[in-house]
Image (cartoon, rainbow, N blue to C red; front, side, top):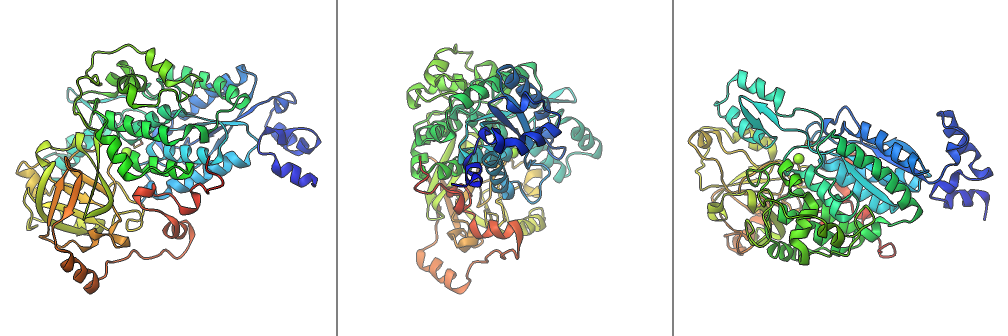
Length: 569
Ligand code: FES
Ligand code: MG
C-alpha cells in the first residue's frame, strides 16, 4: 500500500495525524488555529446552511458559536463549513428541485472532510431534509440542530401566523384587501428569523430529526433565538464529542422501526404532507422498504392528537409547553419502538417516562383523540395506482367523501391564466385538477397543489373545494387537497388522461381516489393523445435531475443515491 492510499483510506481526523498530516495541519494553522488546536481530537464538523438568501436559517450563526463552545469544553475542536442553503420563499422554481443537490453537497463534505462527527445546522424545510439524507449516506455520527419557530406577528389587534398568508392572499386576489392592509401585513407576518411558526414542513422535519435520534429530545420546538435553544446547541456540541468517541451511526438510527415511528409522529401531530416524501427518501438511502401500503396502515392505526395550526386553534408554543415530541411519544407509547436511542444518549422509553401529562389542548391525550386515525391519509385507486396523500386534519369533513366533475389545468401557466376567469365553468362541487406539476413535470414538484379557490367562488363565500394534483403543498396550508398523485401525469399516470367533466370520486375514509371513466375509454384516450412529456433539459444539474429523479413514493430521490445492497445496514 502506498502512502497515498493510506491517506485516501482515512475518512476521519486521523488524516491530520503524523507526518502525512503536515500539510493539512499547517493549512489549518493558516486560519489562525494553534499547534495545540490542530492536534486536538475529535474534530467536529459544523455543517451550516447560514445564508442571507434564507432568513429562516439566519439563527444558525449564533448557534454555531454555541456548538463550538460545547465542543471546546468537552476537549474537541469544531470546524464550521458552509453548504448550500434552500429557502422556500426565495428559490425558483422550487427548493425541492435542489434538495438532492444539497443532500449530495452535505454527504460529500462530511465524507471528504477530516471530521469525526458532524453537527448539522438548518431550519427551512428542505435544508433539514437534505442534511438528514446527506448525513445518513455519509454515515458519520451526526446531530441535527434546527433554528426553531419564529415568533407570531401582531396585526390590527390580533395574532398573525404564517398560515394566515393563504387566506390573506385569497382575499387580495379576490379584491377584498386594500393596498394599505396588504402592505401592513407584509411587514408583520414574518416578524423575525426562524422557521414558519405553525405545524409546517420545517417544524415537522425538526420533530422528525428529534424522534429519529438526530436532535436532542425536547429541542425541536424551542423558539428561534431563545437562550434555551443556544444552551441546547452548546450541550449538543459536547454530545457530538461523546458521539465521535463512542459512535452511534446514522445507519443505526434510520431503521424501518424509526421511520415508522417518525411517520406516526407526523400522523399524530398533523405534520406536513411533505414529510412522507422525505421519509421515503431516507428509507431509500437506508435500504429500508417503506411501502405506501405500510404507511397507509400505520396512519390508520395512529390517532390524531395535535391541534396546532393549521390543524386547529393552538400554537407551537402551546405544544412545546405541553411537552413537545417527548409528550407525543408518551401518548403514542405502545405504538412506538421505545427502546430506540435518543440523541442525548438515552432512549425514548426513559425520555417519555420523564414527561408529565399537560392540559391536553394542543396535544390531546391518546385516550381522547381528535380523531381515531392519523392526520395524513394515504390513498390508492384508479387515479392514483401507486398512491396519493391528503391531510385530512386540515380538510373540510363534508368533502372527505365527494364525487364531482373534473376541471383540468395543464401546468401552472394554464392555472394562472384561467383560475380567476369570470367565465370559468366551475361550481363548488367541481374537482379542480392540476397536472404536469410533479417531480418530472414541474419539474421539482412545487408546493402548488393547494390550488386557489376561483375568485368568483371565493367572493361568493366558497372557502374549500376538492383539489387533486401531482404537486406538493406547503405544510402551512389547509383545505381538501389531494397531493402527490403517483405516477405523475408527465410519466403517463392516469392523471394525464382526465378530461373536463370526468367524475372523480374521493373517499378518504375508504382510502380511495378514483377516476370514474371506463378503462376502454381511457385506453382509447391514451392511444389517441399520448400524454405531454416534459422537455428534457439539455445540460447541467437539471439534466441530472430529469434523468434520475424518482416519483413521490420513492422520495423523489435520485436512483443512484439509494443504498446499494452491499451498503444496506
Ligand atoms: Fe422557511 Fe417556512 S419558509 S421555514
Ligand atoms: Mg413550507
